[in-house]
Amino acid sequence: MSLFIKHSLLTIAITIASACALLAQSPNMQVRPPKKTVAPSRETLSDTALLELTQKQTFKYFWDYAHSVSGLARERSNKTFHYGDEVVTIGGSGFGVMAIIVATERKWINRDTAAKFLLKEIHFLSNADRYHGIFPHWMNGETGKTIPFSKKDDGADIVETSYLFQGLLCARQYFNQDNELEKDLRNGINKLWINAQWNWHSRGGKDVLYWHWSPNYGWDMNFEIHGWNECLITYILSASSPDYAIDAKVYHDCWAQGNHFKNGKEFYGVQLPLGFDYGGPLFFSQYSFLGLDPHGLKDRYADYWEQNTHHTLINYLYCVSNPKHFKGYGENCWGLTASDNYEGYNAHSPTNDLGVISPTAALSAFPYTPEYSMKALKHFYYDLGNKIWKEYGFTDAFSEEKTWYATEYLAIDQGPIVVMIENYRTGLLWKLFMSCPEIQNGLKKLGFESPWLK
Image 1 (cartoon, rainbow, N blue to C red):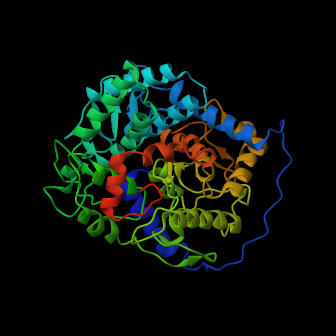
Image 2 (image 1 turned 180 degrees about the horizontal axis):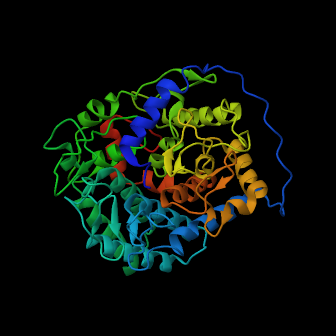
């Protein structure tokens, strides 16, 4: 399920677990010596070859398994509840656009073929349901009609839309050649971008940004987007809009005023500037930063390279320490984030640990912890092998404690693997997104510093 069964799950799972599950745990507990890696069970590849293979195999989810009509990313590889096979995800499709850019740059697919594929998506999106230019969380990949995420979540989802535009703006910057095909693609992206009314979600000019609006229920969900979590990119895009930008006051008075925004405590000797105790699920440090380059990115609240690196290190050290003694955890097997599990779906984190490792967590952390992420990749590929390595790369999650190995894939977990490994290798998506003049203006408006800002 996109994001993590969304907002209520995050608040309940993390806040309650944070208050209870780890109060008895000392943040400075001793880390146990890691277990040795099992000998590889298949031919050993170079690190570079293994990274390339992982990216290429995972990319196939967004290419071979794309919806045949729209080209958008299917929510998951198995049935999405009772909705059947037509459910596509707006946020996951944005991640997929970025994966297609990687595939084009690495010449796994032809440039014209990629541009035509993306143009098909743009044509579909241009005729699909939008609400003041903002897309829903899910839609039918054949008709473009909204599929409700929940009863009242049947309209605009500004967070999912921000993930889509993070990808589309990268595509606009990448496909920059002077030919009709790429001009049409850029023009189509710009039309969607210019018409997205981000400030509509400030509900009439309030110093607040709301996650949802429904044509049937209006603002009934009443979910204000406070930090710290995966939604930083939503504020940056909302501030960067050419015609419908929010005021900087919304960022400072809403996002930065969340109950779990500032932290400053140490966990395993690592200071965490922002967020929930122990950092929360790892997608917090990944989704917004697929395009947004955290190197040297600072504002009055945090250094975001430090924030993301420290968050990842705490997650890693927790798994190495393994206070709940789950089978399999260690320096080669770590990474807690939102994913499927043996019970359904949950936002896994150190304060909500069910013994489930999600490969996307460690692999999408490559820019922050390359040594530890490479150890995890080798363990997943060589030691666990065919238990989790299949048609579209690594399946969504596993629990050696429960002898459970997922067979399905989720778009929002596959996409960051391709993108963040590429950012680790070349910085490609960071370069594209940060080159957007609107994004540079938005960052300046919100008071950010970055090497990209002149």
